[in-house]
Length: 241
Image (cartoon, rainbow, N blue to C red; front, side, top):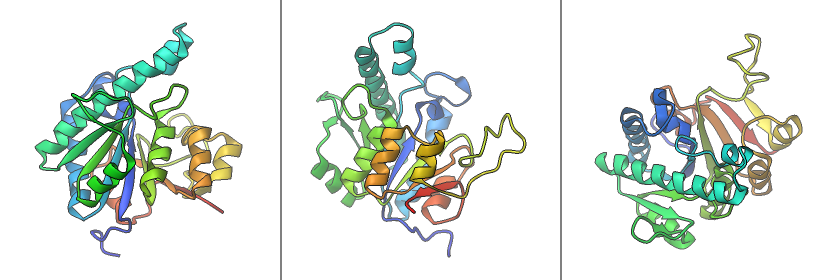
């Protein structure tokens, strides 16, 4: 298979907020976000329709704040607002690369983003625009992983690409255990039964119910987004039986 022939027409790319922080550990590293935008442009240039969901952990972690005594719903709403900040930053980086981009927010904020409207999102994708879904699901108690699964199902994405700092799912933490082995494929039930940290159980169950495959791969290696989209067997594929 040619390295430049995409195997998917429509994908949802899930980025963690931490990915945007790079070595800074907090906030947004301009070099990192420009690099990611350039890789997304390569995929768009192949004719692939790209939707994005970005976490907010580089700015605010709702779960951490609630465990420190803050009301969980308030903390989660703050986390959702952090994802909108990341979405607007990514929109700016993509448009500097010449990629037409729309941010749709699950929490209405007309001056900054369109409201999330499924049909409009699909229309943007069909026109070759990248759509970034901000503010999670719009509800507290749900993670951005669940938002990614939900939006992917709604727009009819063929796959969720979950970009991480490791090259897949391992039997143990590869940073701590030298004998850790990478899984090439797993079923949704494997992930749920063994409590593997792919996505939270709500997100995984949603993917299972909608037969939506998840590929967990390493974002830090340049060109990996294109490799995954073109069917190279990198990372770990989570799918049905």
